[in-house]
Length: 214
Image 1 (cartoon, rainbow, N blue to C red):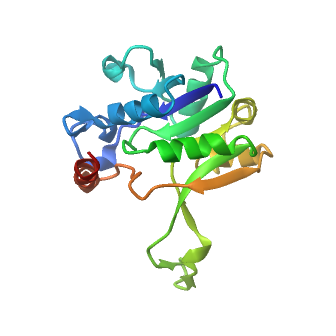
Image 2 (image 1 turned 135 degrees about the vertical axis):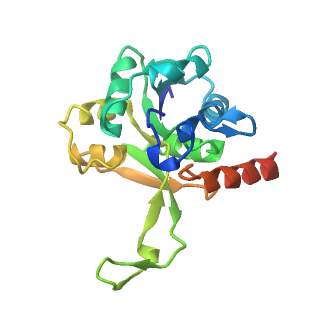
């Protein structure tokens, strides 16, 4: 299956509190984003990789990686990457967070493999915390899953979905697909170690995971 991997790394990360955006912080001496790129290159060596990234950081990108301009929203950023890869033949398009450096081959191959029978696939993990609704009533956590990336979709359908005008309801790429009527989206096994770097403590956790898995 021919694949395009879009890695969204255009955020400025003001809430992270570091001198640089979180995707460019160092993890075992290398930028978080580069760990993510390496994971996809190993799992899908023939894939085309496009990274949404500010021009001031493009010097970091390995040879052969396509750069796309970030937008004002994640939706616009992904739309820009789709335009940047418009001439690339692909059966599948995967979209991944640049701040998820520890994605495994099993998670990547899981979403790609699901496309043989489904329009899209998203990796999910069980919710382990107790949940409460805003009104204070308890919620049954067994009825919920936390969604990770990469999310994978049939290339032709994702491109058609992104022809829709932007909506604030587009929280991820699966929501764009659903709005376009492409609702056959499988849930595949995620990985608790496939964490998203959100705060400085997450970098320390990622360091421990890498040490234990090396």
